[in-house]
Length: 270
Image (cartoon, rainbow, N blue to C red; front, side, top):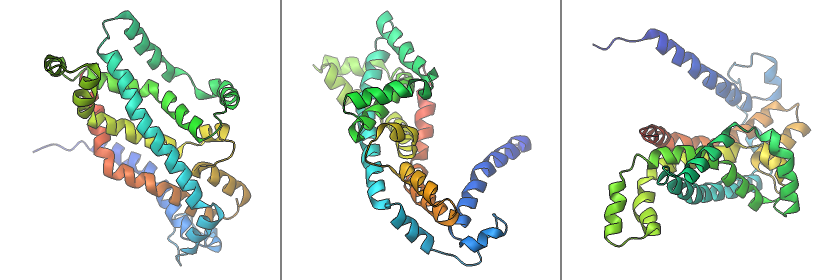
């Protein structure tokens, strides 16, 4: 009979509450009317007010902001998967060379550079190059995700037997064919991991769109403006938060097993 580790179980339960309690508070607040906020914040609403979501939909211009966020997020995910995996493959299969090993550590070292340090130069450069728009923001997501993604991809690619590539080369396949026909399909778990993490980051990000975009607004930016203008109507504000949270929560619930699988398999060989 397996012995239960109650200390570990209790720790996991406490960590779960740190996520579930704020989520519960957000849901019950979004379903209340303003006069119900005078009571306990954790109390269930005496009368459910679905009109908060309709009000938030109208005041935040949800369809347009959601479409902008979706366009930026999906484009960033696709470009990240196509480019980051290719760079990581070149590094992983040439790690014995000084140049590629240096590139690997150079990219990984970028993980230790806080964004606020380079924020001002990035804003100036994107403005000078005419990239203070959605296209520029997508490119920034691809570039800034490169460091962590290469760290994941390289470990995963090095766990793939080289003999598979050698067999393909014997059949006359070139480097590009080997990557797209042999390696890239085997990267499915890691692609899912990187794709989901990029999706979560791009959809929820606030700082980069704030300093880069000059016209279009993503959902986090719309909520920021909404909150600053209607900061006393917390019920409608929390309803807008739930509306922005719903798409990414659904994606993660259905794809979380891919994240865990990709990270575990990528740690087999570093």
